[in-house]
Each structure stands twice: as structure tokens, then as C-alpha cells.
Length: 253
Image 1 (cartoon, rainbow, N blue to C red):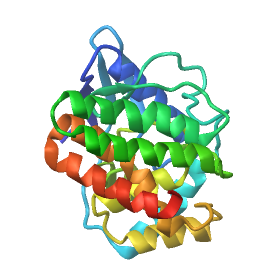
Image 2 (cartoon, helix red, strand yellow):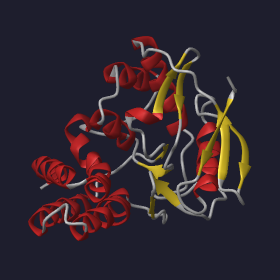
Image 3 (cartoon, rainbow, N blue to C red):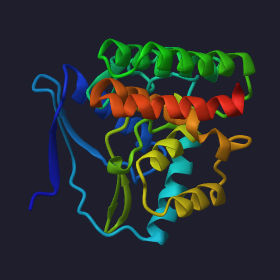
């Protein structure tokens, strides 16, 4: 079996974008898969192949430590792209903005939650009442204007993008940017990462910072991936987005 894996970009420029973000994250940890080759003309990316292994609590704790090292590399601002990268940022197959902002709430609401929620309405997967609930959360977050830790985050850390190999945890397929560290954990929780408590424990043991009252704020950070899925995967995710927004309002409303 080959030791490499060739991935075809899902949109023009997607392979180059993924290469840039993998390299940026790998500055913090060798647990991020290595980029071996990029063919921009063919829109293909060659990375190391990851053999699968059963997740364990020890491997999950190591994943938390590696994620802390990645986050600690920092970024210039919320929404900042990889250093030197001026191309697109993708979450899955969808392009999303990456415009640097000083305030996390402004970045998160204007560039992550609302654009995707509005597209979910256009797709018929979220009704206007649901969108208004989402807007109320966004307005409350901006008014709150709380201090937010700034980290170099993976940005699309669902369970399928945290792999477990015989050599330990491996991170793939990022939508990386300057963001709030809790965003990565919110996505891990949303899609059922194994041994999440161990991941959190390893992260905190390594000096990672999740922000004040972080357990109650998970739903806030799940609004972005739920809005993405509401647009791309159907109305059940629109309903889940509204539930997350309602839960968020109990925290910030």
C-alpha cells in the first residue's frame, strides 16, 4: 500500500488552500498530516496516508496536547488566514470569508454564522422565524463584547478530521484561521468525538485556554457548523441550529 494519499480539490483553488492551512497548523504540531506535494494546475494535493487504529483514552489525551500546541501558535487576528495566504478558505466544499477582525463576536457572527444561516433560508432549510432567533444571538454576542482568547484553530474539527493511527492522533482537512479555541471543541462535541473528556484534559494539562464559563458556551460555537449543515444537508440541521440558538440565548440573551 502506498504511503501517500492524493486528494482532489472540491473547487478551484481548494487543493492549494488546504496545503496552505495544513502547513500553517503543522508549525504547531507534527500531528498535522504532512503536505508532500501540491499540483495547483491539476488542483491536487498529496499528503501522507494515515493508517487507522482504534481510539484510546491515551491517544485522545495526546490529541488534546497536540491541539493545545497548535492553538498556542496564535494568529494575527480573529479571521486571519494562514500567513502569506491570500486565497480562499473552505469548510467542506463551501467557501467562507477570512477578513481579520479585532473582536471575536464581530468576526464570528458576520463571517461564520449569519452568511450560512441566510443561505440555509434561501435553500428552504431554515424558516424566517428561525433566522430571527439566530440573529438575536448574534446581536447579543456583539453587545456582550467579552474578552475572547485568540488561537490558531483547525476550524473544521469534526470527528472525521481527527484520525487515530498506530502512531497517535492525526489532524486533516482544516478550515484554519485565527479563532476562538472553543470552536474546535464545540465541533468535536457536536459530532461525537471519542473520549472527548480525555481530549479536553490533555488540552488543559498542556496549558490550553478555553475561556471563561466555557462549558455553558459550547452551543454558541456550534451555531456555525450547524448553519453550514443547514444550508448543505437539509432542514433537520436547520432545526438543530434553532435549538442551539435558543440554548445560546439562555447564556447571552
